[in-house]
Image 1 (cartoon, rainbow, N blue to C red):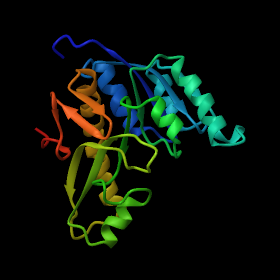
Image 2: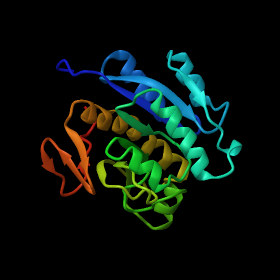
Image 3: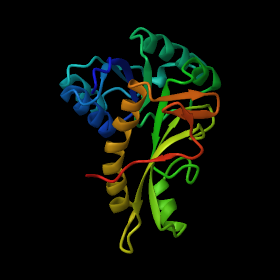
Length: 219
């Protein structure tokens, strides 16, 4: 890791946490220069919280259903996140729309992973929609987060071909395999100071990105 300092990372989840596990694994092995300071879920009892506990990471829940509205939930979430002094916040299957107040608070240090080649197929059911549209390739994207749904500036993508016999499940499985490589890669770049956001522009290695980076092939 070339002696890179460890940054403090908070991960937000809503479910099983498979991308969280990829981050925890690389953080635990030393491949990723991060300290996962906390994992927070808006849904109590999900499998991702158990993954965090198994890794010795504080596993916290903040049920959005206990708040009267979105701003009240987000105010409590910001308070909880900030207790852990994060350098970076990563959304990993966090299934809540975020307001401008929240995204502005973490501007430049809030990442999300989305299972499509953005700007295609923002929102849900991306694999079904890619197949229905007759796409020849699909994939995943990492982007800095804004209040626009899946609309922040894209950093890096991983691509997979769509095969003739694919269905949503087989396609999702192949995309997820690439997600597990993609998210730690982007987090590593941020930790190493190679990646930053300036307004609507992404800078990588001191140069503005004209288009998203593409993850190198495995091996």
